[in-house]
Image (tube, rainbow, N blue to C red; front, side, top):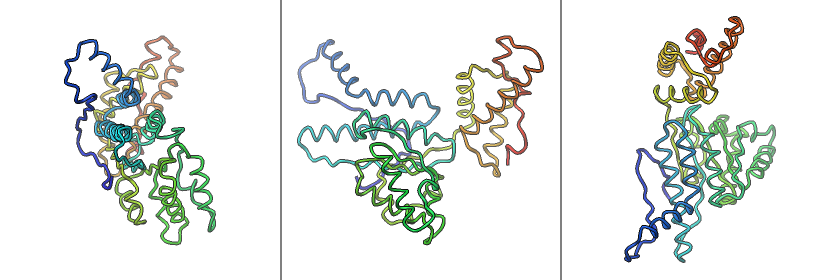
Length: 315
């Protein structure tokens, strides 16, 4: 596959099994065929169930299905004695903080392990400090040690563009060169996922002419809408057994809309929502302590006064 996959709109994919059988099928045989298909595609079904628990990400959900179908059909071709190249699955994740990149990488590790694409399916998270050393040769050594830990799984490097910020003399370039070599020499022994801000990642790819062609899968993680962020907040609260009053919900929605669209804001999407909720829970605890009230309804309820949003939240 020469061109990277880049999904821009939601589509549907259908896998048709047992083509060419013209005999009429009974309800029993159809049921058995359906059960067999579900068993065969259990890794995909489980992955879709996991992704459906996440808010939004409709394009991503299709993209994962496309990757699964790509691998499955290639396996079918191999079983039929047809030509089928073993695919490299190194990926680029483009998106702002808090859009679910690390969560999705971890779930992909589980999927690829169940499909026997990866022997372990574990996720190794890394950043610039984990790869870049302090002297010549140290960076290559650190990077190779990290690659060894990621063997059989996924090496996930967030803010990967930071490896190229220091110019030609920076040791970050040595880390890039070591990664590029490993992607070629060990391309089926691990999966490399580089993640970061969209514009910065585009510039990063230009640092090494061998980089763009080595990433057949490119996935964009768009910012959440205000409605999606409110849904995320409600799910987080429900998991913790909290509820918002109507006034508090309105106050939160207005604040999210304001901070999300603020030009001066470094907005972190789901991460921002989690921090805001945790702060509100702490404030609610202090309020209840002072009120000497601990009935079930009080313990569950986050009031408008608990959601104190300081001006620095908008910076």
